[in-house]
Length: 281
Image 1 (cartoon, rainbow, N blue to C red):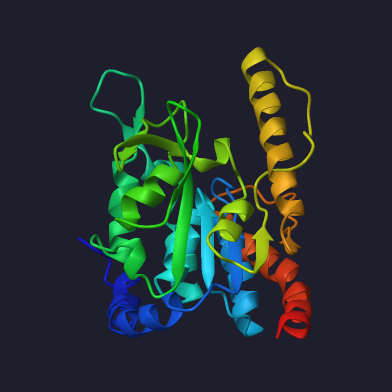
Image 2: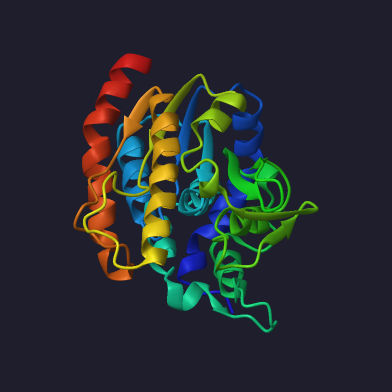
């Protein structure tokens, strides 16, 4: 049963969707927002968006990866940042994953789908959102980057958040898809390809340096994998016109730190938003 408190914004967003969709989607995207992956650090993205809204920065297009896909979808659906923050607060390993009924060892993401249906509505499609949206995933067989810019919204975001090696790939549009962060943690280039003249990139991915030496082989392998992805993320960030990197050191991701994450996002974006307003408007 959907949470009536969380669904308060749904009727208003639905009523406005038709007119807003026609207005926003028929003009070229001028400013694009690339929201990067970041596990359970998505509340920092909400803080960035709040600062951009406060400065009246018009965002025409959002491309998200993993946690950025979830926040981007809620934003493009027309929800308030308060609603988005409450939605992000609901996500934790305890209520996103569950044991799979199969024998293949994968974890099931069915609870995440249920939460997404409550947050945005089960029949939402990407092309009918009030603001242009896309998210990125990776083909689990070929490693190809897949940009999802049309079709059902929930399976697209679910695919963008499917952690490889832990969660069973999400079969969407005929392809087995996993978390887009394995190939492009911060989707700047897809935002350009979809028509953004200027791209604001938000990096909540992971620290650039480890804080301790690996204690066992699995941890060492994971750290090396993270370093490779960090390098890809840095390359994408340099391709953006504006880079926003909230200082998340000392803030462990989790429900109880969402206020701190949101505040860090706002703090990083506030001075940047003022400069954007002066330069691009």
